[in-house]
Length: 267
Length: 267
DNA sequence: CATGATAAG
DNA sequence: CTTACCATG
Image: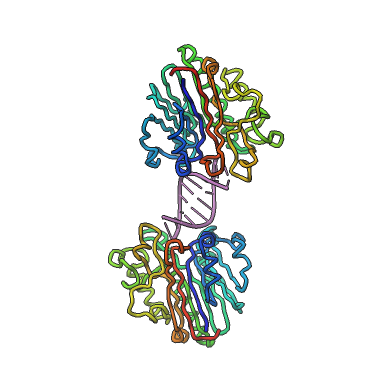
């Protein structure tokens, strides 16, 4: 069995002060994909420097304090790659992938966007390029008899059941028709399976992000934008998939919650 | 009797969260000169908006979040003036003065400077212009039978007994020979009296500022750079002058401490 | 080592 | 509302 977790830590240095280190010590995950690390490896606190029992690959952004993804794995990766062959995005701390035996695992932090701004254009450019990568990644993996797990903050909710207030958000970045249609293509054309939704087809949420503004967390006014998306072979071997919503504000060390999937699969 | 206090609050909004409001409620001062307010009047917290029993004049900097001086007085000023007639500095939140009956009180925040940088040049330009003002201010006041009290963060220590580590700081901004010589001119040529030193000629300090870096406060490794400087008539009527060094870190709401002088003088 | 502004989320 | 950056002190 292999257990994979995805979590946007919203600044790993801040998260480390608020409970992330303890969460890490207690997790049963074999692979953890992190997003919004917002730290150079050299700026990490000591507790996160040489993580006992973990191999780490860090992919910070050239822009200091922004974005940044990483993958922690109990097994040593056979290969690591930062970026996906994009001139614009490979240094932006938004994608890293590793190979474990028979399995490629990626950590993705898709730009969040903001309607009517250059940041939304950037998100759209990322989506165009990244869909090409996802398609090729699955093709190559399939040809080699490998499976693929793409974990990340996709910054898009797919359907009304994936966010609390979908009616009010139809013109909001993250739930625009074109963004939702793009996610449909990730599933239907590129062939990926959203594991949490596959195992829980009929429930609302589970949400993975609650804004720090207002009382979003208390009202469970969240969005499900962090997903573990995989190729079909391993998706069919998913036995469990869930979100660790914090029990209270005191236990919250990020505005996102960890998403975890268990697979009956030997890496 | 009139009691005058000078204090650099290092951000009045931060200070308000750490005890400044309670200090203000307990002070016996009649006039309080503030420096480094670092807030527009409209950004002040409610507790500092309409101060019960005080008249306030705020002189913020055009540069948001920088500098800013103010004067609180229990009596209503007969006149208030922002700046001292300098094209370069009048909008920089570094000087404000008020008239009370028979007395002019000013709040000064002299630029801090940094050797070898443009900020040191700015400090020197300020010093040149400001000495002219001090001289004229005393002349006009004397002619009109008024006294003058200039309170402020002068950002210069005058003599070895005014800072802990004077030998190591002879090339540091704030204790440069030319800065010390300028302060001597304020005293000897412009005719002002440093009231705390006048009443305590033989002691080291009392320091008014301790860097937040290292263990400066614990080691009392401070500087006496906040002074109440007055014309001779009222200086001779000073009965008491002291610095309120905080008893502990918990009581510290600024890196500077309040400096207070009591005068046997009716405003 | 702390302040407030800023851009980003 | 929170992150981390930055310039200033």
